[in-house]
Image (cartoon, rainbow, N blue to C red; front, side, top):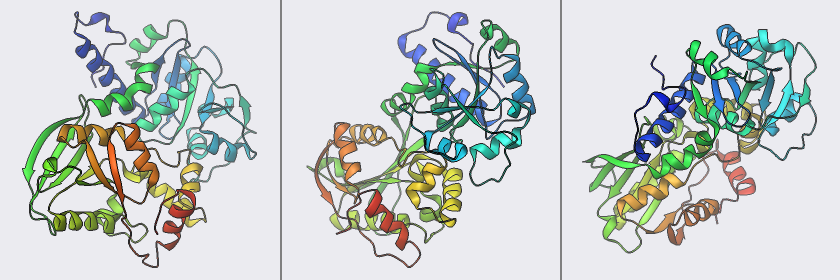
Length: 381
């Protein structure tokens, strides 16, 4: 596998956009490395070598130990750390550090600590430690990879750049990781478009958007000519494989998707943004884990928190950029979620009205809809 250089020294003088592209590419490649169980070096004031607990294996743990200048720590989101430590956790930061020295040779136990759907016995009593300065960037990178936000880190040796290069390990800057969601949203551009007549909206087009140096693609379904309307009907819909494609009864995503397209067809125009942010931004695999936690008695919000995720991890800057590219600055938003309205307004979109979008419970998703109302503040009246 080819890697970007550990630093840009080997790159000929480049424009600012070229340098930004290299930084974006480094973040994407670092996320991919974590997925395959390979450590990465996160650069900053106090560099860290990082490996996700979910994908840790013997080879990755050996590389981690070889670059370590101090003891290993397991970084968890505070909500997950509270379950591991079996006591409430007070934390002002994004991560809680746990010292588990003997686990460096026990990848299975690490995965058990990261994943509450797994059952692993702890070989030792977990002890809390001080989280390093780059803990937030380390967890953020795991989230970008759609892996459980649980990472093993060690402080990097002074010669870490050289040693990482010898081991063919990638280096990425913490600042680039933290800026990545906004950078990706602002960089979205239209890359393809075609007429796709739909049931309920024959006059429909699909426009594909892609960010630079990214394989992630988002779609806009345009019904009629919404760009000519003063404030067209708009639906921001996060992809839901189980609901949209399989017809799952656990959620209301399928009816919301089809109902939005049908209503736009009746009005003669509208925009449905279909965003690649499955499971409120945690990804399909983690959504299935959350379902498993719900089957054990947790609601949607607590299931996400048990996995270390926030209640909603979506990035609505993506929607704002797509609307701007489509020439739609003012909208009537089809949603029951007032926080979605607030998020778009904060991103510069003029939401002139919130349009109700309610579907009856089906006997399976009753609790899910009740949680949306009680804990997420959705408005169904």
